[in-house]
Length: 194
Length: 194
Image: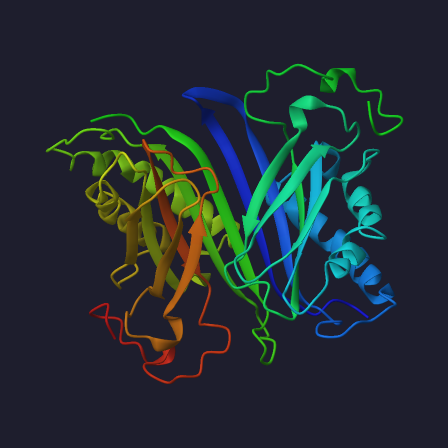
């Protein structure tokens, strides 16, 4: 069964100066967010397979939307993250079912690679709840300049029987990174960590 | 007058398929662009501020054009608009009022001469403050199907010495508009009201 989508929201955030200093090139991050019906709202269902499939569908759709919003080739994306907020008549496990089993593969297909774990967060909440989508470098989780987060919220979602699902993609790290650690120039890109 | 210093830009596009009723043949799109700029008058009372409106005109026009692009690129597809400002805590509400002229001018210019007054909202607030930007039809304020609003905000802005300037555009009526009143098809388009 495919997702019943009520709305899709894309957000692009571009930082051009920070503390009065120019950020060159500007850092840019995009989130694509879908508001879908929760097919299991209001009852306990043991088998969550349907949500696995919805996750797979949304992974492809939202990654493509986020990359398009940045106006780049998928291969130029540098970091990524995912998150979900379940409305009050659903369970946290519903968010897990969307995010974890199948959403990652199509995201990686859109981005060309993606050896690293896709960082994630989830919560239950009402309309307007803020999602802090964690961000990490897509090929090497330890790249310190790319540890980040993006806050998104949708004023009218999730309603009680809905789930908000977000995929975030960037073409850059933080605006003025200077806390050391593994650099993008040092990535081996084999184990997803370094 | 001081130069306009931008810290960041945010572009949000909502694509609305339904809200519990029949899915629309063409999804409604609502878009917002926000520029977070330094408030040149923060922290003190400045009597003469009106000259800054001229400085904001090029920014307004660039924002209007970027928003039209993000909504698909066709100015003729835009049917509703609104504007707003969030002034950081070291500024005054009057600084937000500086956006009335350049924000409105920019959208009329970019849309090829819209007639209706541009609905607006403004407030003083801190980072993460949300603003409900009112939206009305671009040529006739009384078109009831196009009365709408879009909630916007910047997770890390405005800082105390910043202003977040907002433009909003929509591509049509509320998704299940059905409360009567003046219809878009009945607009005379002379006085900006009907």
